[in-house]
Length: 257
Image 1: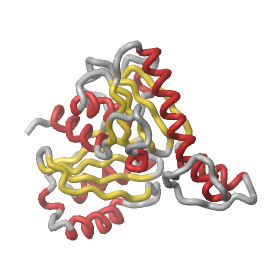
Image 2: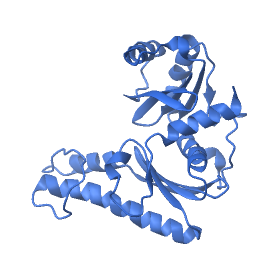
Image 3: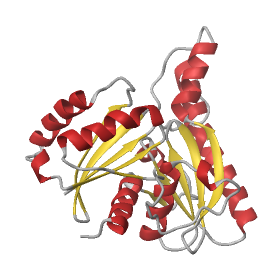
């Protein structure tokens, strides 16, 4: 089985693939101080709850946008999974696509695997909206190449900035509201965050489609993706495992079994 690790600025996801079947995935806060020994204690417990163990893992792959976390993740794979992990973005690691942008070396590993997965699962041109620490829009052309995109502040980041900068505004959970017009402070904040980001998605998707000049599928992914299902007619698909699927594809391309 394959252990796929996707390290982002806020959370790191560990996922186990048995062929093309996702048999488990677990999310932990990205902590630069967490050691390989701590990772194994945490993951062993979760694997055991699912009736699995590390002995079944035969390969590992890592996509990371947090370079400082890589050392301990690689050490975990080497010491406890008996595997030298593939690192997305390393020289020699094939992706099966091209980054047709000004500086391909600057494209984050998360955006690369989103591109690979989107083209495989949803052939044709697409826009991948990833709701993470940042809200990113990745443009994938009909041949599966990365053509650029947009980076905007993430939902949680915006909400926390609002709470910290305005003394009278409380911390509120993010949720969809039935009405746009709030009648109390909490409802107003929740509406502003939720419908504000729906407006952001709709506005940027519309502009990207006009600029790209061809039909495009809109795919929403990331930790908060389920919250936005059925929120806009411009969203075609909500796919919470898109990046994990991309990691599986990249591993298979480089180390076919």
